[in-house]
View (cartoon, rainbow over the protein chains, first blue to last red):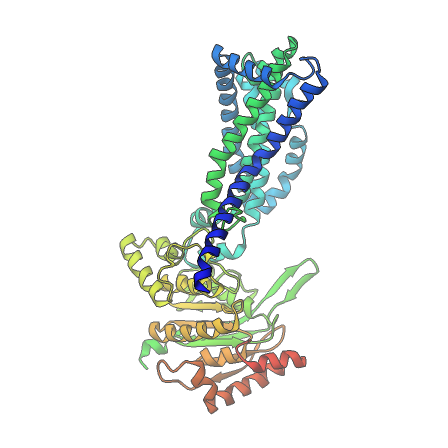
Length: 276
Length: 277
């Protein structure tokens, strides 16, 4: 039996390694499929370049934009606004959300205001804000903040409210005061929701950024796309979309996911799909 | 017994508690008077919903009694304090702290220097048999291991009084027997004053120096039974189940508890099977 067991074990290990490799490739599948459909559509239907540019045109325009330095300028301008607005939104949303989450009465009294302003969030502010802030970074940063803040705020408040009371009682019984329970119970306990809020907030932050840049900026990826639309350059429009999407994936995978893996997944607070 | 051991550690007098609900106040307990001497292991057994946990939470300082007072070492209890450790029914160890950092948490809060803290924690980890698991997180441990960490965390902070609220209710029957024996040994070794709540008659008699029986809601203490002192280290289930005197006491307590509720045959069998198994 034991003689036979060894090769079987090896086969199953190899199969498992293969399976794992397959699963790491699965996330790429939708992109490959869409690209194939895209290539087939342009090849078979032969639409005008304005309706749907061929893949090769889009790649060529990305190369052109990169070589001319336009791409770098626009990406830097957009990322600067995105990060500034998001950091402001995350910090204020976290502080507000934790305070409100700890205080049920305050949460109830603030609820109408939050619902009111949350409903008006986004580009509804744009016409008014152009006259207040003018065109430029301030406008974009405000719109991003306005989006990120509410998402982080609501998630943080919910996360704080859902921390089991017994954890707090346990630390208080060990002699822990307010600061101790805040640091060692409330914040780590609410982290799964806080991280979800930040990830979702950043995603919506991109939308607010591009919306702001379409109207109110001289540089940036949104401006680039809007200018391209005026010259009917749909290859640049699609290129802009691709670049936005790729940067979003990179930020999520290499910035936010590692934080999540090292904290809430390590602690067993959310299911870790990568666990053996 | 020396004078210090005879000193009154906890005094509950005229305690009565009501909970505020939307339909008005609901009485959680009847009037409870209770004294616990230093070094004593007192167990409280009673039907569910009788107010045991309410009494314990008031002793811990989590709730203010509607009526009456609770004193610890002559000081009025108004809030939680590190001289009164609590082991909770629900698991209260923190999922985001490793075994080592959970057990050392109380010492960390007390500002004990790291070297001293680590030394103490390592000793406790060895004592509860979790050597090699120091840097694991709670979700990587079995239920019994987690409960050991919870007990060790409370012990590490070195409180005078330890309040335990059905700490072994959630672990499997076999593990529970081991944990009970370990707790018995730990208490003999450290001479803590312990107040232990359970709904298992055998657990109450096995662990306690004195067993209190509570009536059904709103609970009052209707009987107290002194358990004769066992030889040090004599708390093991083999000798307990073969000890005629102990079995007699357990039977007496069971009758007192059963009188408080109409037990279904299934519940009766379960209670008689012992240790809540």
